[in-house]
Image (cartoon, rainbow, N blue to C red; front, side, top):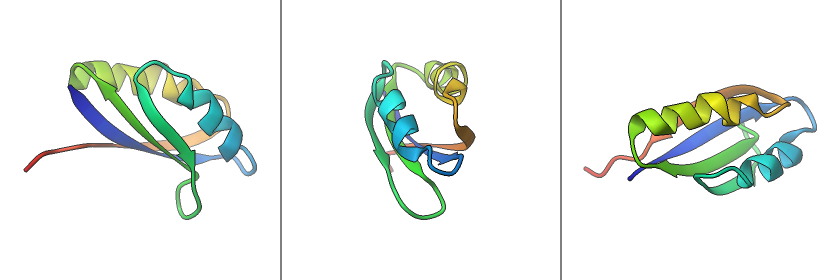
Length: 77
């Protein structure tokens, strides 16, 4: 199992709506709207890195109101 944090920037005023939509996607553990340089932070999981990448590109980035994403895989050192 691979997990990652997805940091999301949204259009002004869209953070709450984007977080609500993303929270319902399969593989999403948690989606929170936050303050700071990013508007939404998502914790997601998938079976493989490739599957995680497909989820981000095909599902998360397609949500209306998102302007930029940054995916940070969780590592266990």
